[in-house]
Image (tube, rainbow over all chains, first blue to last red; front, side, top):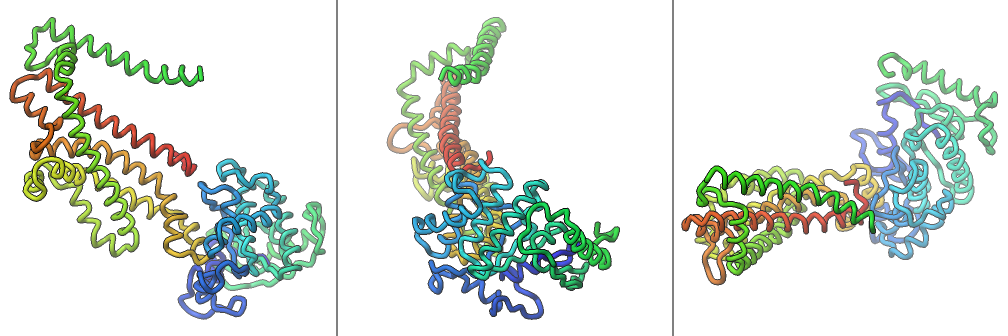
Length: 242
Length: 260
């Protein structure tokens, strides 16, 4: 599911609320049947779920935010360690998601030896390692060049398809790129400018198998246009917000 | 290896040449202008005085080094703990930081007699003097380093329910090391100054006198050549401590892959 909207409409805030990093000043939020503010405390909080899989929510930020003093493998093992797994076990389990993002041969390298795209892949593997049911991405590839971004989009979609089928994982991501939203999402939400409301809930009617060439197909462009119009109608393209 | 030798040579040669040139001009100037030796001794005279008094100076160097290093270690331990403590909460920081700053601004020369009263003359008062002068940069840089941790990474640790100890050991301290290392370096030079000042007031006790006492003694006897030799030795002590600390912290920073 993609989340689009003008800058400052509250997309990132919404992700932070969902993840339980921030708590709402008013109103209530139910995520996966819980109040996230409560859950974030129980979320792997030591005794209760220590070591067992199922941190329900994971977060990927706009930049990779890796620990520079840890190798690729140890960066991905970190969430498991923090939740009480032994470092050997954590490393063993970190290999899986690193294979999924095709970084098997870079396990012992350090973040400063990786390209921007590779760092982002490590960041995604780190989020996947806890097998979350909900993966939140806040403009994950915004800092990368267009081609790298398209290739990562393709990989992310494949990862999602596989994990949605086997583990019921949902991805909610914020983006400013219309084509990225159309390419990745099954469903796109458009928010209006401040105060942000959801003004469009658009199911993306494209086949499940999406290759790179689909970006130039007619249905793809149609979907892009629908999102563009919604953004235009709700002030995302006003002088002031550009 | 040949290249690294050449590189070392290239970086060492210019300052050495400068030193020789300055010494030569100084030597000639003093001879030609007939400046009396008790005002400005010739470099060769300083070398000779240093050599003749080598036993005295070596003892003094050891004594001062002992005081400076003891004070420095105290600063490292206390300063790091204090920085950690202040980083726990903003309120704590606001309540205590001004008093930490007080350590930086207190005129150590004026306080030194008090240190003698409290700790007795000799090593202990000298160490405490070195400690007072050098602790603040360590507190301040530890605190700044811990405050400067990437907010997103803090979020990440929170999201995974990390406990306080894990957050400190796996995120806070490694992130803070570049800033802390600056504190370690600055403090190393200051510790030697603190020890010298301490000795001016509190230097004499059992064992041999430190460099501070030697400076005072040489001055009273108008042995300016010995005075110069002592001052140079004191500077070298500060430099060596600084160099050792720099080497150690550079090594640590490389291991942590910090951008320097």
